Length: 267
Image: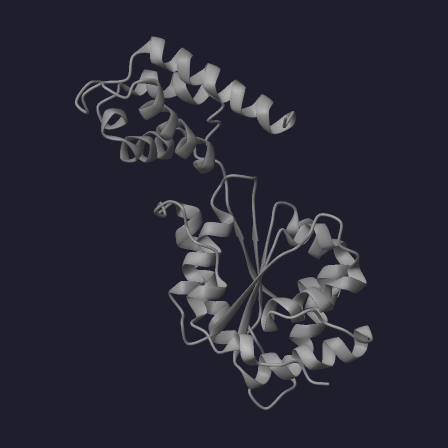
């Protein structure tokens, strides 16, 4: 039986993750924006790659929200997914219901859904699917491209996604491009950190550098959002016009270590 479309009759934003922080106009984001526009126009595959915490998923979701002419579906690929399970995960993401049946039939129904309802797709952490799983997504793109409405934009997001995709030469032939997200370098890091918190805006550059080194910032957008939140926690009563002091850097570093330990060893 064809998959029900009941769950598709919703606003596209409801199918996308909520962005926790404002986006930062990094060079990576600007390149991704240009390539996503190209992928939408050409209705093809785009890889968004880069280390953890560099803003890949946030960028993909934000760019999807800027293009509501497509009905966006978002899939976070499980860590333990088998390649032959990918089509079922795709269908459940689109419809909101578990998929049943043979892989071939599920894939055929995915094509019908995507063509008929103008679905574009974000596959996040897609490297977990491996080369064969990404090939299943590529096959989906190929089949939709044969339909009367043309292809569908698919964003392949994840650290190592390009490596997983590039193992298959036929995959590279179908890529519109690759947006490579990177950790923030010194100049971009300083500019970014100054926007995160009023006290960071007046903090000397050398203290910002110490925060990055000692508090595991490492040029990661995600880590720096955590550092800004911890600053309010360790010094809740300091005025906004007071620069961050070195003792506060040490306290934030301790908090970061406690948070890391708690994640590694949950109670």
